Amino acid sequence: MQETKSETNQVGRFGEYGGQYIPETLMSEIDRLTEAYDHYKDDPDFKAELKDLLINYANRPSLLYHAERMSADLGGAQIYFKREDLNHTGSHKINNVLGQVLLAKRMGKTRIIAETGAGQHGVATATVAALMGMECEIFMGKLDTERQALNVYRMELLGAKVHAISTGTGTLKDAVNAAMQEWTRRMDDTHYVIGSTMGPHPFPTMVRDFQSVISKEIKAQLLKETGKLPDAVVACVGGGSNAIGAFYHFINDPSVKLIGCEAAGKGIHTDKTAATLETGRIGIFHGMKSLFCQDDDGDIAPVYSISAGLDYPGIGPEHAALQASKRVQYVGITDDEAVDAFEYIAQTEGIVAAIESSHAVAYVRKLAPTMRKDQIIVCNLSGRGDKDVAAIARYRGVNIHD
Ligand SMILES: *Cc1c(COP(=O)(O)O)cnc(C)c1O
Image 1: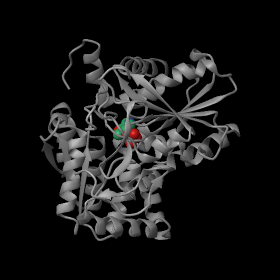
Image 2: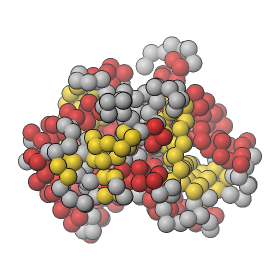
Image 3: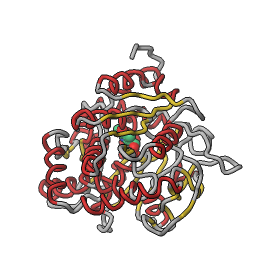
Image 4: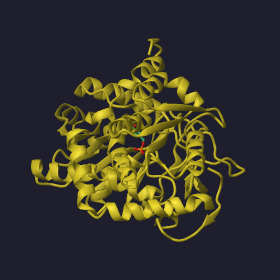
């Protein structure tokens, strides 16, 4: 989307971050969406229908699995994995998409659009649009359509139209721009399903609420199994949705350490990084005030990570605020560390986790040995790694067809 038009009010603020920086033309639609969300989030019929879909379609609650072999091998804290990788379509994205598409339907919309980077949010959106009989168009950077040809075909198979966006670097931020523009052109029948805790209010709050089912379940499952709260919760951070989902119900439990793992790429002191919280500066982009990777002129800088799901140049505003208040600690994990962790969890636990989630696993490998055996780490496995196998093979110098 174009840079700021106006800051109309203080809604949707997280400290100094968040807000609504959008063109005038979109304001009435954003107001309608805010009103609809405020109404339906407490509506018993809406909540019952969403709950039914989460259980019977998406496979919730996801398992909380005690990784005993990995815990023993690392010799410290007990490690539990929250298995969002076992959800339908293979990641946490479905939690948010089901919520937003259901809301769009209640608002009378018949057409869904979405951006996608690696393709997981696009696939989840195309899936739910098919389920609900809605028209679906996905905006994806041209470079990403080439890197993720299989996911493009998968979305088309599900009945979606995929637009390859060749402006800018042909990656995720350009896809977000294109989807925002399309929404501005056609708001009457169309809802834009943003895939992470980003964009103008109400998106960061709404997406967080839909993803907070993750921490709600973790708390109940762990209390039932151990009678305790975790000592630490660890999650990877792209735009921030799986992390805030895993943290949310622990934010007011001061004994629970919360750690977000962002993609450091080749290292935070190189220009090949996506570590927004560690290297970013305050700015306004994609409808929100937050931290962004910027060049010396204040333009959005190209970002890099081995993981297409983490290479977004911004961060959800709530994370920027949680960093400022020091409630959450954010650490950078390099490509090398993430790839090592990808192989390690496969070989110790028999789980092929997404390369995004492997950033969190990499930090758990550092953290667990520093803790006692009666302490507990919960690590959110945001998605499954089948999509990454060919790329990791290439990283290791093995060429296989994908
Ligand atoms: C999209 C994605 C992410 C990154 O997005 P967040 O909004 O930060 O959660 C992480 N892991 C997986 C598996 C994803 O698909």
